[in-house]
Length: 199
Image: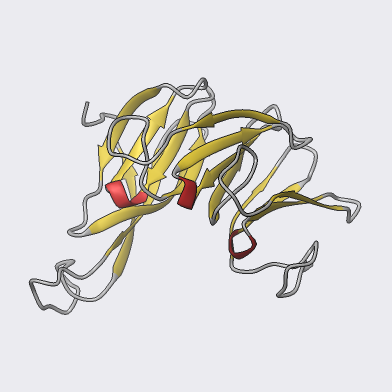
């Protein structure tokens, strides 16, 4: 089965990145290039959420998306440097974060995930870390990227609470190499993080 074509109409996409499914079978897609989230219902109905902007409920290059057990939707609103939480009917519930490097602040958040306790994990990409927030959005912990010049680009949390992170390492402009040591060509790894944060 396949959904969508390239475009900006409802049900069409421009550079979609994130996808999540709720308990009712609804599919949520971060339609990144169109600055919106699309909800695809099992009956084929398409709902478009948001649009380009920085007001609550609007998005700029949304990237990752996740759904909790209650059907609430979490969006990594990348260029707005925040996480937005909405219910399944598009009602805005919370907005967390702003641009910065302090706990609870973000620099291009690209992925969001949840554990069974409702804690929120964010791939805070250009701050080269993963942040853990409480269910109410309070910063709890953080983990640093491991690759040289690397940043976290995706994540998920399994049922046991183990955190898996996709980390991408870019080239260090002061060095040359073949990528084997992380200083040459782009490379990526998936790693399981022990939940013992930097702080």
